Length: 105
Image 1 (cartoon, rainbow, N blue to C red):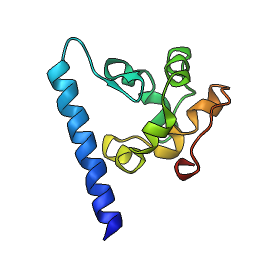
Image 2 (cartoon, one colour):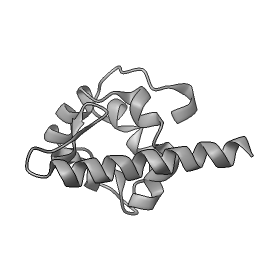
Image 3 (cartoon, rainbow, N blue to C red):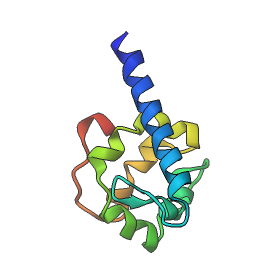
């Protein structure tokens, strides 16, 4: 039962972020230290069957991301066609020694 309510809370948080992003519109919202307007910079590296390596722009974005915060969205990433394993592998692929929370590996 706790797992269901935890997932529900994560879905609610994502819904709130989506609404905030829509309301903020031109200004753009920031999610886990990542401007929502720049999230697509990493999309190719975390989607599809054979994704390309992350671009330099994606790596610069990941360098400043709050990985603990992003970890809270791990279960909802597939709803956006994002492979969580690939998403949390980006810091290593970008050659950054960032701490990935154990629950996100």
